[in-house]
Image (cartoon, rainbow, N blue to C red; front, top):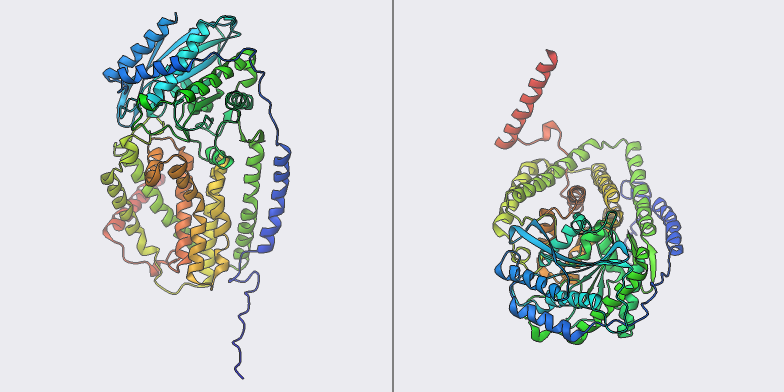
Length: 624
């Protein structure tokens, strides 16, 4: 009779082979149920503003003729070029045909591919009974890669057609307005919507021409209206905010009245990503960030359509008419009750219902508690076992030094102009700056990062057999760093925790995987990277940036679009991830004792001499 091999006993709870408490972790998840129930009670069903009594009179043939004329006469409307200046004068002339006087608001901005460039916004004012203004915007420029008939001659033409209808109403319609209307033709829309950003930063460029106390209550942006896609609403901001719910529900109703169905809009998951990493390529984004309620009508998807082949022959007149009438109907409803659509808020919008943003934040913050509770319990267990934590923290400090060195090198190269420069605006995905990787600068960055790693490497590689207690201390140090990074993220933008939580809750259990196959530990490490990979996938697929997504996100950091606290938190997260990866593959070592340290190289010796000299000079100054 063949004896079966002895069954492997499961490690005892609380032992070094199973140090993380599953019971405490599971119990902490109970606290998450409360904010989930609170979020469920915040679900609401907002109602649209009252519709106008008369149907919109937007003429699609007139709008299509204007779009064709602009695209054919000025196919290259890049800011600062002859075509850009010609397009400006063309819009001034068309507004003049309707009896409107176009005002100019010049400004300068730095954009990738053009450098510091002069721009000019054009606007015309139609006074109403109230000085509170409703603004209609559309950018008139393009990248010069095609005539830009759809993007954005169609939006400009729709703006002009709505302006014509406003000042010369059809027979049987009243011309009086309850609110002042401002028709704004922005510049630099194809270069990060710098024209809309200028309005957001300086709304007085428009309101100073109105009576004292005037302000902007809502903005309707028109962008690429004559494409092949269905009518769509875009409402993400440069910050974790969204326009007033009444503005969106009324925009929904205006499109539904024209088409019989609701417009396309970002999915709930897409909205969660937009709150976690606020980003949009449309003109409503900078306005929402400044607290101005704004929405974009378009026929594209998450990004403006590709400029290649964008000719007048490709214009969809019927689509231009549908979206133009929808926008005109929205304006009529806003004019009757614009104050109800004022301001911005934070929420998730799905179907005809909303979930309050603060409730979603509460769920995310509560999801930190199981990780924090288990980490603190592990910390207490390590202290009770008298396991020294200092060598593990010093090892993490060395890794963090490498990552901070990488961040400093990146900032230095960005300041030297090696990466795209911008006034904090997104890059156009179709511009060379967004899809041409600066290989020289990236190789220099890789070389500098490699030098930093070579300096730290001798003290991070194991030179002896590492005890299990030392590995647990290394895990705990990394988990504490993850906790710090997550708290910084929570303080900066709680929604961004959706990118951090997978790593927290997966990497927490790696200490309990001791003795499992290497592939299991590597799979756990890879699963913790789901958050950052999810963000890259969003840029690759939602915004159709493809394999250029890593470079595009890096460029957003270089241009200052990503807040500095989030960038620093990512470096801390990266150092913790590197230590956890070293532990998973058995290449971790605590910071060596003085007797175990390798001989210093010339760089480390020079740094040591400088540090010791500074310490000596400081002591002498204190002795005096």
